[in-house]
Length: 135
Length: 293
Image 1: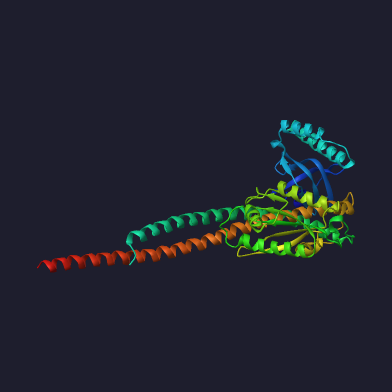
Image 2: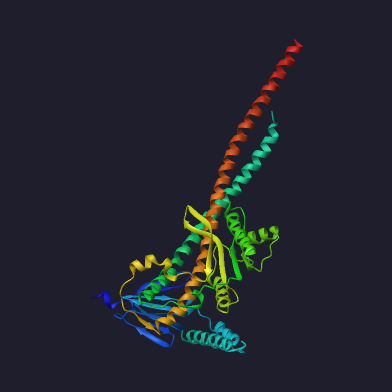
């Protein structure tokens, strides 16, 4: 049962398929926190939050992407991640993340919606910063 | 008989034009391949979304979402027209604009308040010519529309629809069916019709798996409706881009062939003119010599 020890991770954005390769484990940001997926996970569909998608490649080594919302679907051994935006972590620029956070902080928060929007933007920028600091 | 010089001049002009049309044909072919690749890549996303929707609908869920609800009174409508920035692509823009005019006329008859948004310089030029005012224009979509830019437009529509500022959104664009078939169509983007409608393929591959929905099927649905709406708008832009390149390719191929034909005709005419010139010169010389004897 060698095949069941692997997951096929498919990462797609509306523009392109970024990734389609076998992995041994995936950690991804669900709407309420990090979730880990190992081979043999029961089928599920989940909403993604903002944060870092990390996975262990079959040959060893860990790579990661920054993902911004979307969905994950686990079906058999296939993990499909659908997201609007995905950036490889090593391409994230710390300075840019700082700038985004500043921008988010200066957003007006007059109404409840605007406040939520601001919170989301801040959260996004902080996640970017955290990833940039790690890589 | 026409002057050989004049014919040479025209022949040269046609040859130059042929060079240009031939080059444009090649460029359009290259761009078409690129645009096509992008469209194929994008199809993966739409397919996955459709799969999830199919899985959701297998769970006997009541589909309800503000974007799915049709309004009875359609007073404020939006028409999005996708044309190209450049011309020389045959009937591509004409077909789209003809459909758009139909919709504009219909809206006038029904006394709907129609907001017109145009992408592409050809569209704005046409509307200006027809004396129709438009409310928004997008001129920076080339052959590779970016999702972020489309996302902005789609989000604006979705938000306005939820706030009931608009009751309907239509798009007129050229749909890509196959490489040899594209046609201008008008589609209603909002309200989103039946989500499961286009997902026949996905359903065939669907299974009876019991999914775990996190946080819940309803909340996933709430997110997936706007996502699939955006994907649909993006697909319209991609289709339009691919079709534009195909239309240009075909138009330029025709132009090159016409130029070839003209070059053949002109060469023949030129040869004839040259020959008759020589003949008449010879006749003159012989005539002159005969007169001297």
